[in-house]
Image (cartoon, rainbow, N blue to C red):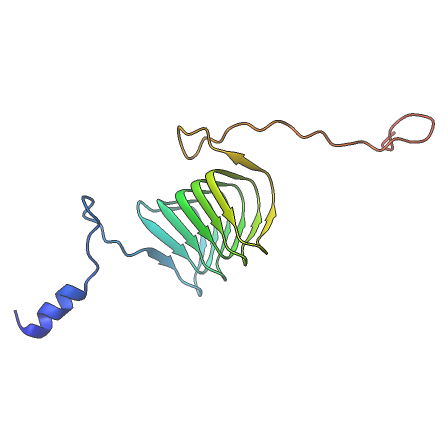
Length: 152
């Protein structure tokens, strides 16, 4: 090989140990909208919009990225928007994150300013996609003077 070819070969992404797959993430770029489910055995970075469920080893949702659907991964880093349930061993929410949906996790971190509208529960430890049950939250009901509820 010529010296320039050697340099090109050395610049290629290296395979992950034991997997034979490259360590470079699959990317949904900012100008791409995906309608349908995504399944990735490796790392996935979403800078565009995905309307469907996402399953990957590691998921990163960029600041302008969005997922509308269920997310299942070992590790999730969110700086953008997720509308749907998140099931992951590790969940990191950046200050720009906007989550509308429940989170099931082993480890959760949130920066100040992150928006979360939903319930948070721990995984049972056996599988990422099997969250533990959380007790129901009772909602107070307004009552009318003299008895009865406001709905009557």
